[in-house]
Amino acid sequence: MAAAMEQYLGTGRRKCSVARVYLRPGRGRIVINGKAPEVYFAKHPTIEDTFRAPLRETHTISKYDVIVNVMGGGVRGQADAIRHGISRALQVANPAHRPVLKSLGFLTRDPREKERRKYGLVKARKAFQFSKR
Image 1 (tube, rainbow, N blue to C red):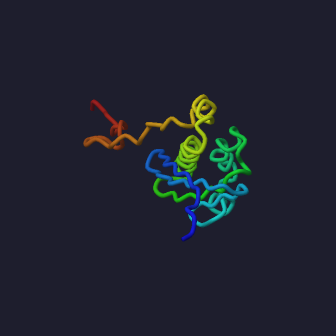
Image 2 (image 1 turned 120 degrees about the vertical axis):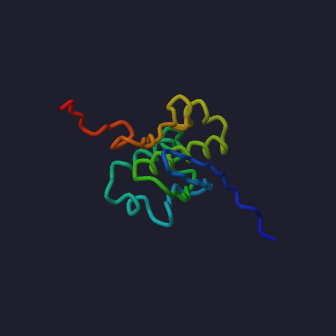
Image 3 (image 1 turned 45 degrees about the vertical axis):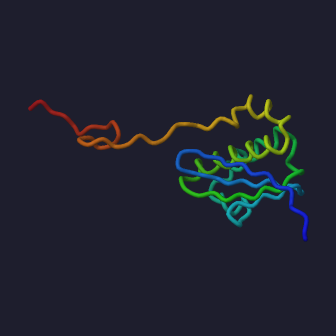
């Protein structure tokens, strides 16, 4: 029987995006939905810094391989969901990382969501043009 592989799970959310993040001891490889981050976020090269931040701040970039399944939302929401998931997984892997991650706000789930559209309006708050006459 094979030995169980050491792995830490973190679930990250932002807007409509949900990311399941698995941290495994390794050399720092990151895979997002079966693709390299450079390929997955090819049109948005600056976004890569967003989800690498927790690894960079805890000095664990080359200690863990990161496997991510992310779905829903847009590019920015997915990147923030991945960051949230990585932060939660790092906290599980080593509770000593919690103060650093907490102080940077990486463990806090951003509660902002899109407001629903109300009847009689164009969008959530935008109204049709009004004229008295």
